[in-house]
Image (cartoon, rainbow, N blue to C red; front, side):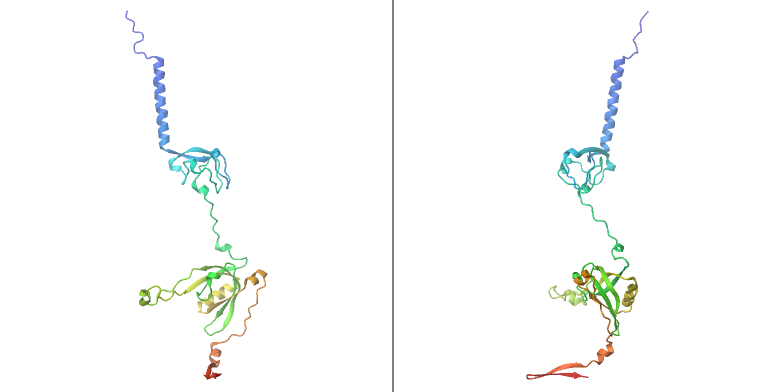
Length: 267
C-alpha cells in the first residue's frame, strides 16, 4: 500500500512566513495612505505664554490631516527658534505665523465714546470755518447758530469733539480750469466737513433743526487750560444785531487831502 501522508499539506513555518509578509504589506500600505493624507507640523510641547522666547526644547511635531492644517502653520522649527510669541499657545497645538503677530486692539464702538449723559450728533460745517487738522479728540465747543435774519443764539453748550469726517473738495468749476497746468490751477477749496460731537440730549434737536433751516453754524472753542481746570468760560448771549440794523449803520470813508485826513459818514 502506497503512503500518501504529507501530500497536499503545507508546513506551519511556511504559513507563518506568508502571514507576516501579508501583514507587513498591509501596515506599509496603511502608513503610505496616512502620509499621503497628512502633514507634519511644529507644535508646542507645553503651554506657551505671550512674550516667551522659542527654543528647541519646547518644540515637537504633530501629524495633522492635510485638510485640517491651520493657516500659516510652521513646518520647519528652525524658522521660529529665537523668536518671541505674541499670544498664548496651548500645549499640543500647532504653532502658526499668527502666534508671532501682536493681537490687534479690539474695535471701539462709537457708542462707547461719548461721556455719560451725552448723545452723538454730526454737524456739517464749512471747511474754512475751523482748522480741522488742529482739532483733537476731547476739544470742547459752544455751538452758535446765526439765522438768515442775522439773529444768533447758542444751540449747544459744552459739546465734546469725538472725531471729524474727511473733507470733500470742490472740483474745477469749468473745463478751462481742469485743462490748466496744475501749478496754475486754482487751489482746491474744502467744501464741507462733518464734526462728530457729543452733546447734551436737549441740544441734539436744536442742532439738527438749525442745520435743516439753513442757519450758519459757528463754534466757540474753549482753551486747553479751561478744559483741564474744569472752569469753562461762560459765553454770553447778548442782544443780536439784525441785518436791518447792520444796514442802518452808517458807512464811513476817509478823505485824504495832502497831509489832512478826515473820516466822513455816508448815510
